[in-house]
Structure formats: C-alpha cells, structure tokens
Length: 279
Image (cartoon, rainbow, N blue to C red):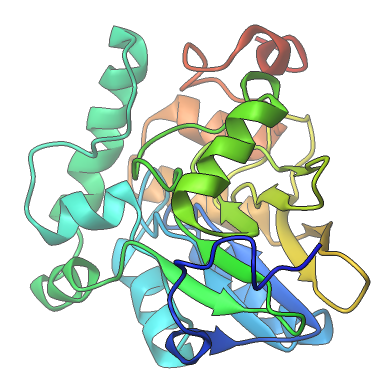
C-alpha cells in the first residue's frame, strides 16, 4: 500500500514529526505514579520514543506526582478527557459513562483528582494537544489520540469495532495508523487494506484479566507493515495499595489493583469483554 497517496488532501510531510523503528505508547495513567516510573525505566529498552495517550488522573493516589514525572521526563502527552476536565475546571470527568453506578464511582475519583491537583498542573493539562500526528519511515500517517479521532471520550472496544467502521474512522481522520487508549483493555487490528489500529490499554490499573501487572504497547514500524506488541509492566502494586488506603480512596478501586479484576466501571463493558472478567 502506498501510504503517501491514499489521501492526497493530507497535510504536507513536513507538518508531521518523523518517527522510525519502535515507539512506546501508553495511556490511562490514572495517578499510578509507581507504574509510570516503572514504564519510564522499562520503555527505553523496548523503543526509541515514548508517547502518552492521555488520562493522567483518575482513581489512584497523589495526582501531582504523575504529572510532575511526565513533565520532568518531557514525554509528549495527548490530552485525555480527564486531563481536559481537570485543566478546564469542569464539574466531571466527561468519561462517557451512561450507567448510574459507573458515574457514581467516576465522580468519586474525579473529585479526588481535581482536589489534589495543583493549579500549576491544572494549567499544564489544559494546554495538552487533543492529537499528535507522526510520520513513519515509509510515509505512514500515524495519529495518536485518546478515545477516537471523532471524540475524546469515545470507547473503541475490540468487539464493537468491525473493520468497516475502523476503515471509515481512518478515512475521515486521514491516517494509516491509529493509536488510542480510554477503554483500559489493549487490542490491535490490521485492516484488510493494510492499515492498522492499536488500543494501548492503560497502565493505571490491570486490564480486568486477573493479573496485577499492567500493559503498554510498542508500535513497530520497522517491518513491511506496522504492527504492535503488548508489553507486561510489573510494578509495586502492594505499595500502590498502601498509598490508596492511606489516602482513603474507596475500597473497590483498591480491590482492582489487588486482584487484577475490575470492580467498577463494569457497566460500560460490552458483553464479550465483560465475560472475560470475574464480575
């Protein structure tokens, strides 16, 4: 596939930062500064560049710590719905939930994060870009965003994202590789025309798989066509549990970190994804 000529109306090549080789992608930090530090120690051995796909805050402890780690490391960050809401002093996280129980727990995590984020870091989060566009070594147009190219808080679930739907998203967004997060569960798909979609999952909490580690993605641009591998990231989850309890964060959030199974935000899960979990 000729990546440069699929959409001749695309912006000139010079408008995109060029990347090559392997690129580490992660999202959903959710205030998990311990996993974030572990990722920044591990990812350089896996990739030459690192990008954050947004949602620095959520149900973990000490929100400022994660923001400061990212700022000090100079990691490019896509603005997630949490970042936008906290940065603009909005009343809720705009997470995209529709179920009352999901929204109840979302309100608790948002209130904690907003209350414990400094004004300096709120201002920083407000300035983050909603997307980052890159160029691959073969001219691949790579789009990094949070939920989807259409909406910051859109959930792109594997089971609800058929190929024609994804192809239309990529057509409209004028990209050949799309990287997102927001759902918290990693997956990838190569479309019949060779274009590629990857959901990097989240490093803030386990992927509802009964494991205490989390996941990030490494986008590989060195082959004939783009691909991605998911890297397990182990961190001191027991220390995170201690900090969450010391901060009096609600126990269902703590239980997820301890067990690897989601106990909140379940109602948004499609039936296939929910069937893989315990609850």
